[in-house]
Length: 281
Image (cartoon, rainbow, N blue to C red):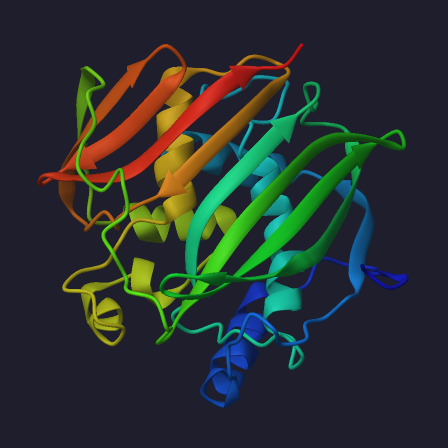
């Protein structure tokens, strides 16, 4: 249960939040029974920067110039609120090394790019995971007082648990037919970071990625799902579910596969992303 809402006057700056979260990370003790911030952050009067939106559409492959926001773009708008919650001293999971493992998006109607919106975010709770502790963060977008878009993202802090970390179903590529092969450029992480504001060092350069155990920079998980949805297409009222299975190293070549509302991004004998799109109503 969340406490009373905290109304913000401006969107939090991501760079200071990332720095604050990094400094606090060594002192965090993740546990599914730990307490977490109960505040519901609210940011009214949000308008979209159309130049940043155009840059986002270009890097993700969405058609530019459409009146409606891409189905994944509200995540970009709400991400600073989620980051403020996850960098809070009361949030028990360390920001460094936190892995975005899944997202479920529900878009109830189209969102005009020129509209005015209210954003809200809160931590729904913590749960035990076979590899550690997982937090669920809920983001909502309201237009004219109605919820027009909402998402549930899960973030995993890996640590020792009492259960064996068995290989999950779906790590091996599935049976969806290949639709296209994509060659992903080395600078995709920097371009997406500039458009979204998410400049996590693991996405920007091989040297900074190696500090966190990656041989090269990796693509943002939200870029991979956005790129898939740009190719797949989504109904106006829709529910999207996606799970992030394995990172995409940059540069790299991947296969996009899809059929009957399901999609995958795979390469090197592994599935990077798998998901599905369902029409509402």
